[in-house]
Amino acid sequence: MKISEKGKSVIRWTSCLGLLAVVVIYGMRAEGVTGPWTEPENKRPDMITIDAMKVFGDLERPGVIFLHDRHTEALSSKGQDCSACHLKETDTRGQERLSIKYKRLKDTNRNEVMSIYHNNCIQCHTEVASEGEKSGPLVCGECHQEKPDIVSSGQPMGMDKSLHFRHVKAHENKCEQCHHEYDEKSKTLIYAKGREGTCRYCHMEETQENRISMRNASHISCVDCHLKTKAKELPSGPVNCQGCHDLSAREKIEVVKDIPRMERGQPDIVFVKREQPDPYTDPEFKKEISENLMDQVPFSHVAHENANDTCRVCHHAGMDSCVTCHSLKGSKEGNFVRLETSMHQIDSQMSCLGCHETMKEDKNCSGCHEFMPSGLKTKDPSTCVSCHMKPLAEIPDSVQPLVLAENVTNNEPVENGSVHMSDPLAKMLLESRVPITATYDEEDIPEKVIIKKLSKKYEPTELPHRKIVNTLMKNIQDSKITQYYHQDPGTLCQGCHHNSPVSKKPPSCESCHGAAFEGGYPYKPGLMAAYHNQCMGCHDRMGIEKPATNDCTGCHKEKKK
Image 1 (cartoon, rainbow, N blue to C red):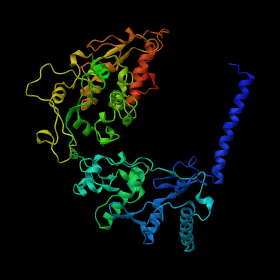
Image 2 (image 1 turned 180 degrees about the horizontal axis):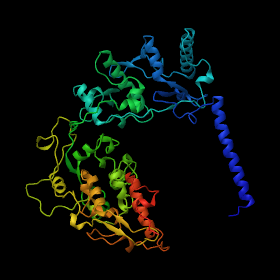
Image 3 (image 1 turned 120 degrees about the vertical axis):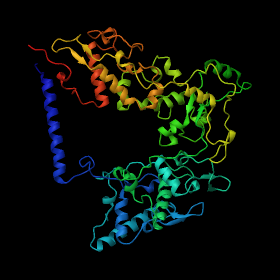
Image 4 (image 1 turned 60 degrees about the vertical axis):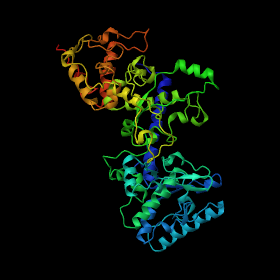
């Protein structure tokens, strides 16, 4: 192939730029110039940025990279503790604790706060250096760096069910130790029994009005409690950054396997609530929803609790039911996200459908579901009735719908004196489902399938059909959600036979995919592409290493010449 002069010029310039990049990078290393782009291993979980001056406006210099654990270790070696940097203060409940701010309780003004850092930090570094020990920076540019050579490896810390149970047990069920609400009348923090929720319902990413950020709240409360517990020579949680924010250190934290159910007065099985419009104030809307609403959704609360580590997976803004914020029309409280959207939004982890779609990314599921329609795009009518179940034909007269009492708390019983109750109708509907735990009988599944339509250079391919089906079934036999949503023993077959009806004898691939690509059907590949995309794509997503995707003879034996 002949290359034009213009093409040769482009190649020459590209080569020169590539060579220049290599020279620059090696030159930087030779001169000792480093940074996170050249030394990716230079990471620490205790790296924080001191940028407290932002409360007074834009920063004049870059924030200061501060290695917290390194400083606490240095102080400890000299017999000092956290109080060397953090002053004590009294919170609104009258409890004494360490302030999260450095050498102060409040941000007074720019000059005073700046002087606190400069005077104390430089003085400490100077004293350490005068003793002949390795110390920190003494000049501005060594602290305020545009491109620091350290990057953070810290990972966010969360309170999962195991950690929560351990704290409940350690505090002897005294929930008020952690849970509180701000009372407007008394202007103090109070314990509201029965309204306990995750800290993140009030404490957001950034400080808002009289609510400090989640980051500050957790460091003030958690670290302070751990320090006080440690001072009593009792088993305690981490008090340094690494203990919570380093993944390798976190893996050493004991995980409780059999965790008792969290007592919050929650029901076991209910119907997903939806608002009932007032016929007097909104008759047109009542007519509209009465004509378009689908059947109600029975919901197993206990099953979803067991499948998740935190209530916040579903109750992302509060512990109330979804309809409190997400009305049928949409409301300000729910950011005008309608109830139907909140349940079916496929790209949101906060919706039912979005969460279920994410579960399909598991390697035991993704091989099949990658080639199948997602969410509401599927034309299969069974998709909707998987959740919106038809009412039972016959309901015993003794069964009465459940009406939950308002403001159910941990110890205040609901109807019939039971804390955990189920709606009998919802329970009957869920129990009427027959879980799919197997596929067709062995004799109905061909043991082998010979693919010979495209055999030219290679021998026909022998597909171990029954082995593949049995392996797929084995991989998902313990999955409750799979048993719930696979509506037929042949549902599993839809992973490969994705556009044909469920059947013991589905049509072959070539009945839809022509030998060559058909231009009139841009989204339907030719037969060879369909086979390769389906088989190799499935192996890739499921992590199957054999046969190797770059070796044709792993599936196709070469013809003898």
